[in-house]
Picture 1: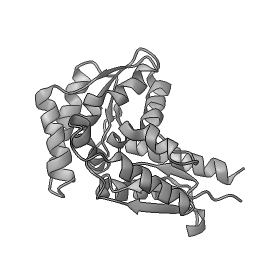
Picture 2 (picture 1 turned 30 degrees about the vertical axis):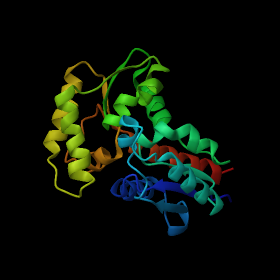
Picture 3 (picture 1 turned 90 degrees about the horizontal axis):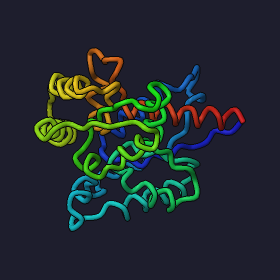
Picture 4 (picture 1 turned 180 degrees about the vertical axis):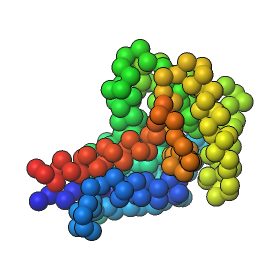
Length: 236
């Protein structure tokens, strides 16, 4: 029986990485410890901020550190890699090319899931970092599936950025009503679905007392794909 080892390129950010590991454990159909997937986690919070670099290329570039971590995971025995950070996927090609093992793509998996449910012509809202929004990378994955995207207005993005950086990343309290209010605005703007497209926001999503059925978490979707990959390989 093949038990492929998952490598997690973590620390971007640290709490999102911990939540991702918890999701993987919760989603794996297991009766014993031995049924769970083996993981190698490199939690590297020293990786430079992704959004800071995307918005200002004079800031420290995180690409070199992320490719280094990916190689370390591969060298340590990882057979596939996941990155629990949406903004980091701005550097996906460089990371993927740095290793010989598969690197699962949170944006590809999320756009595929939304497309399978709503089909071409759907409209999706994105709650993400300013870096992810301004880079247009996530929007590109949806455009490839003929799905339109809407992002928050300037004041809404300021609220989202506050939740990400001043609350979750800073380990400070947040009000889930602020998060839900911004999601609802996108819904009311005509979105068939709203995607939680930042893994710090995923932390808030996972702790919601109630989750609207039109709200989809990219971290949750990536966890599903990791479990699927593991189970398929295990059953080969």
